[in-house]
Image (cartoon, rainbow, N blue to C red; front, side, top):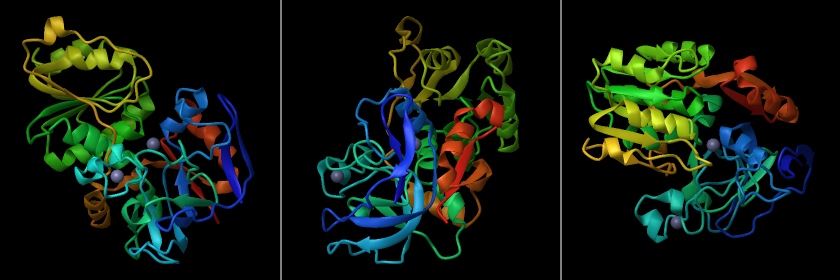
Length: 346
Ligand code: ZN
Ligand code: ZN
């Protein structure tokens, strides 16, 4: 079969690799039908993620069809259409029993990280019973690819941890796919205003379409000043950080209102300053989280009922065999105006 293989910083290739086989009775082999590329894959290619070894197949998102199920797999059988979660969970360890699947002792984020991932014709999914979701018949499978990672990430790490409430003023720093996923899912709670902050005009225009009430371009203006103007100097109830650099985490600290919540979503590669000299008395909460995918079933229902329309995030479509071109498009997001790219294995 063919797979997109990482060969050290800056190097990847679409190459022949042996088809995965069942290693444990709890495994399933899934034939990939649709997959996508995540910002995290670009981080890996920059060499930011030390756990990814040379020779690893990348990718942690996708939908597919069960090709073979191990003897202990009871929820799925050959031919079932399944959604692959970016988080693998055994369902039994102390973290899984707490619903903290991201820290599963025999799982967590391993796909396309410490085991071969979904940017291939076939993938082995460990703990299939608790790491896959059955696709209801008739559903738009492209839309479901957004449920593997970005929607639960934006929702759990941003909206739930930020405790978005009706009437809140919220700011989302970063209008990439995950920031936009937070924007879409924050609207479950009817915040009064959603201020989107990003340096890219195209992404701001998309955010407007998706329900942002105010847009701030932080390349051409001072975002803190703009927020102060919009909120009469009070700041925002919730600041969702969806970039992962010191400057954007710093901005969240500048714009947070007393009693507010800063929910970090971004993947940080460097330490950021914490301004306790101004925040110590402000009754704020700062949260961090790796997505647990505990809300995937709930989100799936909202997609099924068309309350949530994640297919809006898809801007480009390729064949799986054109994945090198798809990477090129996705990694030049400003020029290509790309958000999520879908690759189909046909
Ligand atoms: Zn991802
Ligand atoms: Zn576990």
